[in-house]
Length: 140
Image (tube, rainbow, N blue to C red):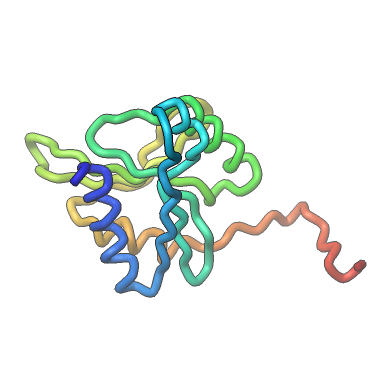
């Protein structure tokens, strides 16, 4: 199995046990150029949020279209797009991290040797409220 798919499966197995839903975004059919139409790997649904998640293994970087997707989503909802990563280090062994791509740079939000900590982060991540948006639902 592809290392990225194995990582996503590992994450999904733990997320499901915590009453979350993982909805994969399927790979497009055809040649590699169609990857541009796949903005992230899966949607994670928690009790409080619907999150877009891109999974990476080792030092793979976001592709240009993924950076653009991240920036577009971040401009509307700063907690909606996340990158999770699994990598092996010589000193610390297997290391999992949660990252954001902001201002054209990678930011590491948290790191842990336990994948369960990644899942817990998303479970505890509270919804974002834009105080500046007018509620027009009552005007309709």
